[in-house]
Image 1 (tube, rainbow, N blue to C red):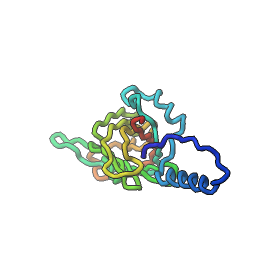
Image 2: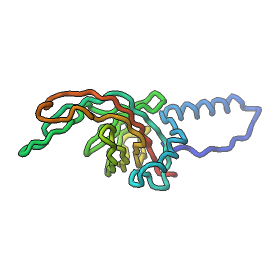
Image 3: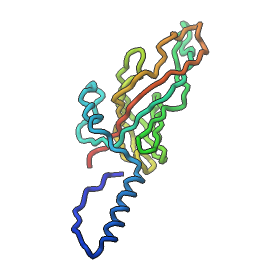
Image 4: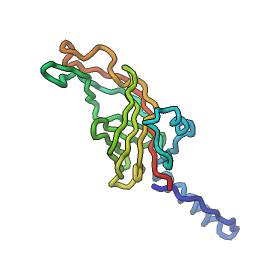
Length: 198
């Protein structure tokens, strides 16, 4: 939803009820959008990110969502002759909360996508990742295509992770001896959703 421009209203003592109803309607409309504005410090933190992860000028941050929970991994063989092993994510998606009681589920991978609880969804057209250390999920910036469903993710252009903590299996290593082992690890991740400034 595009943020409407503020309009100036003249005070009229004759129709206070009408004005009150207009205000209530505006509040209800904003609530229906389910958008929780990002904290100023979260937007400013973009300048501390690697340049490849920064969102281009001309975009406005409209939504912030945080993920806290556990991710399930399994040690699997990803290549043969010679064999190579890796911890692969089994969790169907990373659940994020926007602070307004809504959820955004992030499905990572080559065709990464985000699905809001209101039904709107976007998929990555271009994905840039900056790997963290051996214990933390990578930071990312995704250029996404338009949502085919109206809602909170409509007209989103970029999605950016500005902070991650944990979320990967640091120990034990995935080898032939641990093949098939499943490990649950905690994670934290903060995401900012951007629209072209109108």
